[in-house]
Image (cartoon, rainbow, N blue to C red; front, side, top):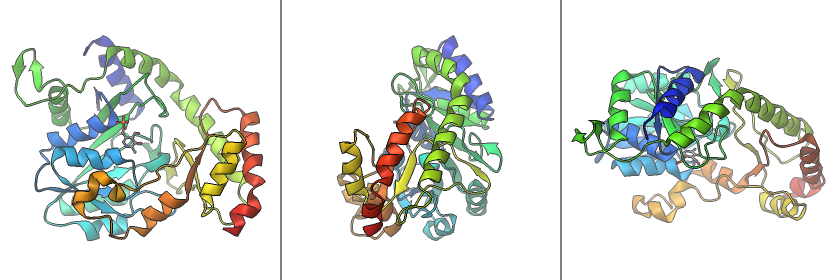
Length: 340
Ligand SMILES: Cc1ncc(COP(=O)(O)O)c(C=O)c1O
């Protein structure tokens, strides 16, 4: 543990995403939790999170002791709407978690400007955004700290759970290294009440090899996403994923939205095509968050995304032949999609 593979992987990953430092940890959730802890965020604090995201974004805030405060996304990108962030800021707000959902980056320019104005920290949840860019600069150090997941299905995936933090902050890096290792920098000397959140050597070794292919795999994802979008461009009653002009999409997922999502999903299943819903239940409606009393509050954009979204197969392994089968299976449902 904490050996030469991890050390090399950390410097290679930091270099790949244009950040000064990287700290390998055990998962994306742990990366976010450790960042918030290191910032001293906890009981009595509020952290702004998107109302539509994977539950891990909210869990990290809860594990730190702070309260997640949901803000609605922009319908076109599914990422945090900067206009709505300011309305959610209170004297207790300490940080904003910007989730680059599905691989599309958040508007980091506006988010950083809001954070600066209000003295807030910005944590980027980049679990789905390996290789995404905002303003021609890779995701990796726009915010104060960036959390990565290397869960096997991510654009860059290990053989099991793994994650990392990237940041330009040397002091944060030092504290994270301690906190992930029982709060210890020197063996058997514990300065903090830390955790066992280390990234294993074996995963680090595998990740080092896979990093070399990431650019090429991301290009392939991009090509396949463009093939879907051009094939579906004439479909009525469908919202296709877009890329904002100053953004580069990492195409972790290809998510289309349609009111007749469930019927389309059943049809694709019958044609031998597996799809996923990212995500079927928004965090504020999960039983785990009953105590926040948000279930009856209205988050119409998040709820509409959760009702309509469908992720089609996408990955560097997908052949054009297989994709053609998926495309024709979707297109033969055009009337059903339109009628919804
Ligand atoms: C948006 C988002 N945030 C956080 C996570 C958590 O990452 P991990 O599974 O490595 O804990 C994921 C992973 O699925 C994710 O998709």
